[in-house]
Image (cartoon, rainbow, N blue to C red):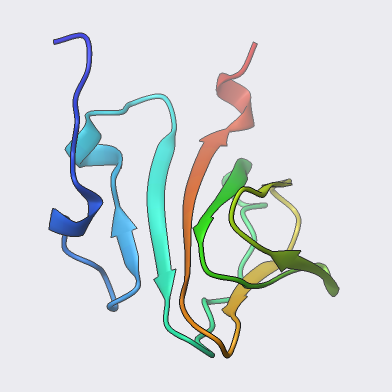
Length: 112
């Protein structure tokens, strides 16, 4: 099949906030995820230096803050934020409501 459609709401959320969409979509070249943080919630702080994975966050609803190496980026729907593998990052939802983002990631060694 040349395409596949899924409903992210039908994919079980890990830890209540993280939906791994890569396998349900059948993607093999990069990862696709959905992060859903409740008002005031925080994601884990991490980097991808060990696996050389780049990430792009696509903010689809809500608002909050993305901290990257101590700098803060205000998040709102429609924004796309690129993060390099070595960037230490953490997403936090604002107090007014949840933040939902789609994230894609891929190992830089697979790029030409």
